[in-house]
Image (cartoon, rainbow, N blue to C red):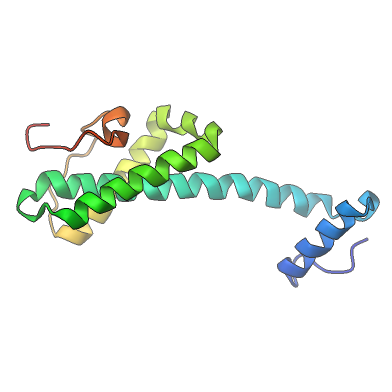
Length: 147
C-alpha cells in the first residue's frame, strides 16, 4: 500500500510511485492510478497536436480571408506552428494517424474557424476544410483567395 494518496498530492504520489518502481517494490504500486496517468500522457500529446493544428489553420484562414492584414507576424506564426507540429509528429509518430482522421480534422477545423472568427470579427468562413493536410503542413504553401 502506498503512503501518499493520489487524490491528496499527485506530485508527491508520482514521486513515490517512481521510487517504488526503481526499488522494485512493485507490490506497493497504485496500478489503477498509474494506468490512468499513462493514458493521460497520450491524451495530452493529442491535445497538443490539436491545439497547434487549430492555431495554424486559424492563421491560414486569417491569411486567406484578410489579405490586407497579411504580414510578417502572421507568416512567422504559421511557420512556427508548422515547425512545432512537424517536431511533435517526429517525437510522437503515432499521432500521424490523426492527420488522416476526417472526424478529428472536422473538429480541428471548427476550433480554427471559431478562433479566426473571434480574432477577426468575420463570420463567413467555410464550414468544411478548404485545403489538404499536405498543403496545411507544407512550408512552401500559403492560401490565396482562389483556393
